[in-house]
Image: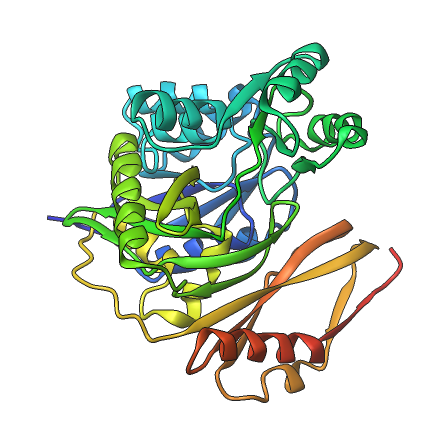
Length: 396
């Protein structure tokens, strides 16, 4: 029997978010619908989830001692990782001491590091993956390129939202891709994965929820990325029944191996009826923001319910839907969005602005959501709404 008491009292429940971006913000809101006290942590102040949480802390979450100090002071009932850059060995230690980590500390440790999850998927579970090699030094990187071949994709073993990722299309790109990977890793310079470029028709995210009543797999989400960073997503992605069945089987296997309760974003490449595993995230996925308009329970609502140990008897899918990321470019701590009345003037359009405190270079600041009779129409509607939006990047 699940019990939740009055928040901010000795009988209440408390969740601590390790990472407070736009995905964490939605999780915080969903947890608070159940009366959960939410503590948001991140490396910078005024992060999106901090703006709605009951309390927040600013710390380097790669600093195990700092992370432990906050957790021991807060004594949360649930520790919920939302980013890759966390001192996961500390989470493993804390779980052994009795703390609850979503979905498990081991899952967080394995998936925060591309090497851990790739070795689990390919070498232990035997899932189909692209050919790959890992490299620690520049010499190992060059040897990996020679073995994997060109074209290939280079990624830091720890990064998110495409940071540090690039494609080597010719020999002239080799040096540049090494530099991008070293500068873009969440934990700084270091180990990379070099993957053979996969010839695929499209790529999908299979959102998979492990909860107290079993495992629920949502309709496949198609998406478009630029240098590994999500730009548009849509649901459902049309695919053959054979491919869909294989994708579900892979999602079941990898999430079952990771264990625990929560939502997982399982990424795969599809070529005809063939399915190739790419990555998995043990938390809500950026491409899954489309579920805020496509379903009665968004990926965030599902994650909160699963974390709390509640069952998910069903998920009602409304129909063809799309999302488009709002990416801001510039250097400012003052961004102003305009023409919002025109953006949402068309039926079936919604917008979410994340409230991020600053932009340096380019950064995702919001998302446009749309629904229509078909995927094509939903994407076109999202594009029309996006074209009406404008923003100003004011001087610091």
